[in-house]
Amino acid sequence: MRPGMDRALARTWVLTLLMILALMINVTYVQAFQAQDLRDSALNPRRLTDRFTVDRGPIVADGERLAWSEPVDGGEKYQRHYRDGPAFAPVTGYFSVFSETGLEAAANHVLDGGDPRLATTNIVDKLVGDPVPGGTVEATVDADAQRVAYRALQESGARRAAAVALDAETGAILVMASTPSYDPGAVSTLDREEARQAFERLDDRPLKPLLNKATEEVYPPGSSFKTVVAAAKLEAGADTGTQVRAGSSYRPPQGGRPIGNSHGGTCSEARVPLIEAYAESCNTTFAHMGAEGLGHDAVAEEADEFGFGERIPIEDRMTAAASVFPDTDSPALTALASIGQGSTVATPLQMAMVVGGVLNDGEVMKPHLIAELRAADGTTVGRASPERFARPLTSGEAADLRAMMEAVVERGTGRSLRGTSVLGGKTGTADVAGRPYNDRWFIGYGPREDPRYAVAVMTEAPGAGIESGPIAAEIIDALAA
Image (cartoon, rainbow, N blue to C red; front, side):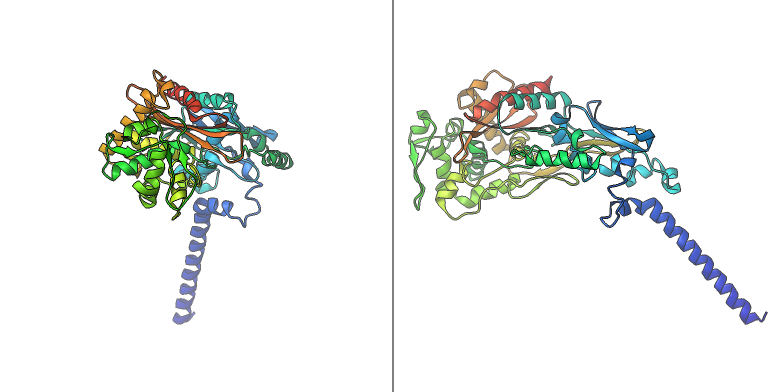
């Protein structure tokens, strides 16, 4: 061959080898590192078909398996199982042929082995294309306290109810209970038609048991919202002894019906110390603060600082509904909203975060539900790190609010809890228009020695907010045991 032809052939061979090498690198990259994205793509028709061929790892709490998989059909598929499913449904969620929720969604790829962090402990399996074993998700919940909360909510006779307990220092969700609930196993069946029918039955129920009442539904918080208004008053320069307007009735400017108190006593006096107005839950005091004393914008700003107005992130693909203090220029509507009625709504998680900020020297921690992630060999690949969500209070303001919440239990509307594990709290009774029941709230903290648990309980039934207080005490007892 002529020298020129030799050089041309050499270049062709080099180019061919480079193309082959590039193809091999691309195939290896796709198989090893893009496989999960391709499986998750909505354009992949096998995305849902193949989901039960994976041996998903367990969701655990306190050493107990809350969710796990077992082989069926000769080991070709795996069925998901749940322990005490209705009690833990708000935590685990479900894993069905159609979708997933809760921790099943938030940690989906740790559980199915697709998370890139697991590849470092199973690199050979990843490179040769073998499935990486699913990892373990350790939840933050206290298993015994979760069961106590669920049982107490059921026994309350409420049509809807929810409870949340947080570690105020870290934001860890220790209890997240909801009724009515459902069994995740019923919708996590491999049989597509059976799963569809189970979902239809649950969707047809008027109280929507698939919805987590602790995070996905909002309710008027009643007088428990006065904690936010009191925080705004403290930020404006008041202290627990500041004299504030009370009285038996208050009519906001620009019309509106007069707002009264649920009882007389201290609230009937013309002026009272702030701590007593809070302890006795004087509607006239806090309605006046919202409409005139502080004004709408001051209360709205304080609510925003606690997290109102935005969805609360918990984990990936897991958020709480936004709590709302209404945007209005009507003093009458602001007055009503400032006592937790009208258009003010909140999730139990949000109100537990309010308590958490009071208890944690003014710092609200980001709520989280995952304590640790582990590979199949036990190696830790992820661990929760406490993270600040907001700081709506100074340490001094938080101390004043703790004194006010303790006055509620010592001599105020929560005095029937005196002597229990509840150290401080706030009652709330929200009327539901045209209904024979109320949204009964109790928010508080304990135990009395070294208090660290922030609790919010909402039960929907006839009666007053204090009737949710004993449930909060039971939850704190269980956490402190």
